[in-house]
Length: 292
Image 1 (cartoon, one colour):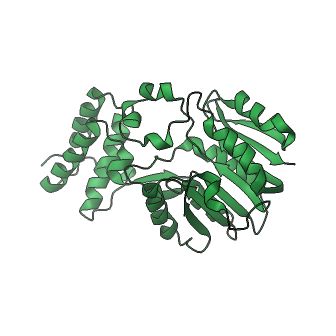
Image 2 (cartoon, rainbow, N blue to C red):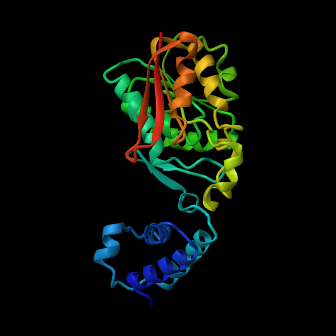
Image 3 (cartoon, rainbow, N blue to C red):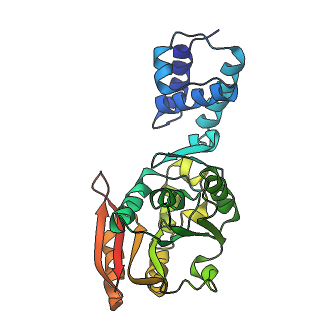
């Protein structure tokens, strides 16, 4: 039988040849997942401290099957069915955008703008897996959140995450095309936070994305139109109808879209305190504004 160390070395070498940007990490996560499938608890620390441990043949075969999937470009999150987001373990399924650390910047901004507030009403537009909605529901324990998406697959995934954290009474999942799905709920001029991670990749740039993104993640959640800005005009203009005075609009953006989105938010006089937040790499990451 092979040892943990030998298996990880073999797997990481295989993934490195397949141009995985993180072959060692991918191998570790997939080996942990293979152990879990046989009810064997494992973590990355134990992989190091128990690296000389021999592994049963059935676990080894399962692990190498996972490595084969990854070597063909399938994202680790779709293989394991989970992803960490703001300290939460979320369930992820194929056909749903994988939550990323970039989006945590937008959530943190929303929390900072309404820190200490109670009884908030929040719209999470383009909720996807429900990552933003669940994270905000955990941080604002009496908030009611309307999580909207046009994709049934995304809402099915979001429902799993909402139920996982017992948030069914406060996170309401709504299928539809942006704000049209909210009509009749008497939420106009009554929302404290409108937050969104909309599709923002320019159409012509989709083909330049990494294979594990363009070949596996849903185009519906990526394509933001010719200049990548299609959704922002709708969020800014239509959002003003739903936000109360002093309510905040928070939008994740592409790494070079900050000035354009700020200009859009400042036009028309609907908002004040338009602010660009950058990520740890110094790249544009979210724009926020306050409803006049």
